[in-house]
Length: 145
Image (tube, rainbow, N blue to C red; front, side):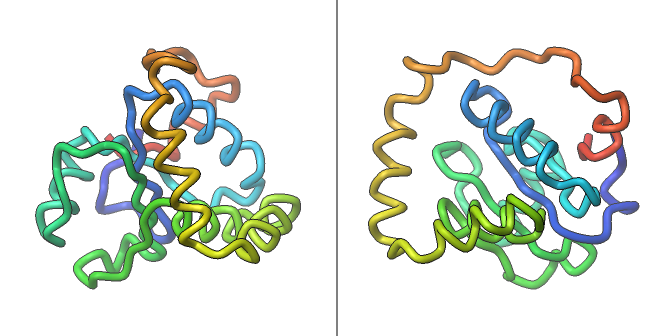
């Protein structure tokens, strides 16, 4: 795991206890072949500090937060829910960028409605995320804290 001072580039804050969120992060890690995105659980100190500094909820983990430039994180430049998903996919490039382009065509209000429905049921369907070894050892360096 890396420290927050070494990260320059995009960061995705996700619910570290959500099975679906953990699976989604693994998918993004696979799609992001150039390691353009780093990750932090919303429950981590780095994420909590970010949330507090931007007046975002610190105990509502039904959303993800995408920060395009962690080195410039004092700016309120972030995207949440499906806008964050679309941005993360686009940053991945390749097939991820294509998926982001396709999802981006759907109005964000429709995407966010679906996101909220899934968020309501995610623990029942995918369970709690449990820490397990990452398939590729190099992926650990892409996580903050």
